Image (cartoon, rainbow, N blue to C red; front, side, top):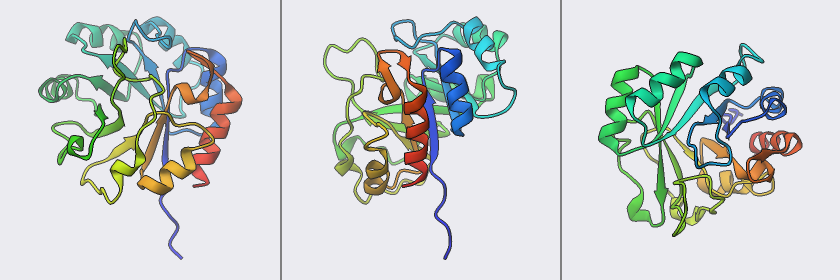
Length: 212
């Protein structure tokens, strides 16, 4: 029997040594630093550099930016290495920043209906499919809004993507089963309070994702 491909796991919003160490120990594929100041998971470039220096290898480092200027990204890259840029920005801007910095770019996309599912990645290397931010939200993602998995029934895009939005250790296996997601992304679902990562939940999320 041919083994199923392993589901990729991304833990977003790493901001403490304990959280960083837990992501490395659990064997996640990616960890993300959040450089959006309105987020409870916000870190400075210097803080991200100090955390990343705790382990040379391990998960790839993702930098999350919201409508960044070129200088915003330069300041972070001057302080620490990033392997991937995660950009909340329009598709043309995403393509321009990808060309400028020669790094893979992931673009989050809020979806509330099947009509929102894009036929192409529009210059991004991968899309993060998540629930649209609720009315009045102060940030475009990371709001613990649960995605309607039924919208992805039978959806098989020709580009890489990850599922986000309201995932937890208790529901991620079902989410993968129902959507066929090749990768999953979590932030609030492994926290004991907003912005406070729980190492035990991080381990549980990775284990549940890999057991699906």
